[in-house]
Image 1 (cartoon, rainbow, N blue to C red):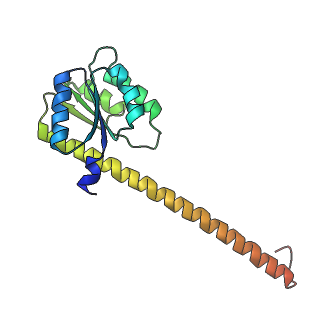
Image 2 (cartoon, helix red, strand yellow):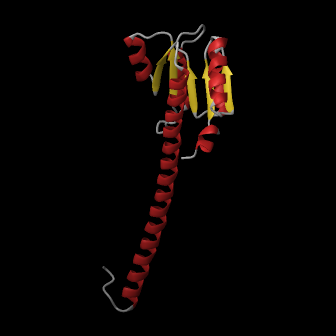
Image 3 (spheres, helix red, strand yellow):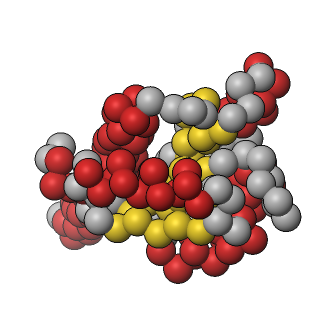
Length: 175
């Protein structure tokens, strides 16, 4: 997988702290990611998600109006069941309960603030790589399904033609 493909990934940042948003934006920009949308208002997350169809969501947990858990619940309704869309939670809440709840709610990864910039960069790259490999696998499976359907139709046609030929040659029509 080329880094060029990864750098075209669409990333959505949802964090109520503008300084965190700007830091993440700076990290992503440094790493060559160009398709970044962001909000400091979690109430706008669903609209941005629907408008931008991101490949990755970077999400804070503790925000006014709506928690990151609530945002994940709402996103789960928009994401098809078999789709792997990674959510990385970035939060100052380092409790075991927060980690377990975030991961159980659909987060693919959990990073505690203050975070290490290199670690964030590497985790983003890793989950995006997984996202794109999953998409390639889905496309490959669709192609295989189509080939199976085509070959099944061909075999059904061939069987009908063989039966017709057998009947025409005086064969047992009950066969």
